[in-house]
Image (cartoon, rainbow, N blue to C red):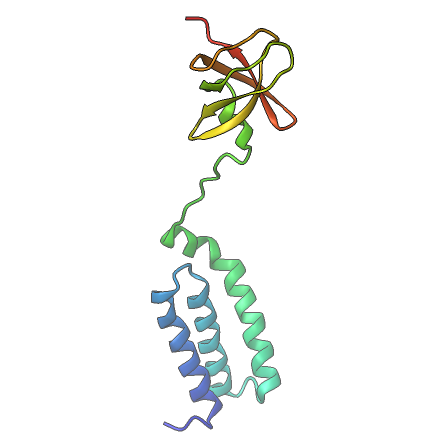
Length: 151
């Protein structure tokens, strides 16, 4: 097998890319390998000659195969299409927290513990003692605004 023959090079490249689909799943690499085999067939039949025409045919064939069959290969391979919550503040609202440092009176800040972290907190103006449970209402700058939990 001589690698100076362009047909052999395109066939080998196509087979390597198609086998690479085992390692790199997703359906794209197998379509690129198929385009290589189309170029090898075109070279063998004399439709194209030379490297410029071969690369142009490979590019066009790759685009056509990718645009035509990408949805088919995606269905066969699958994948995770879940998009998680991107607004972290929504996870904090209405959470129950424990006061670590007294909050208030007035606009005096304190500390709360919620979701595994300590946060700066503001109250409703009354004094909230350490050890009390509070509900997170909103965020004001870098502090969370809380209200005492009525039990």
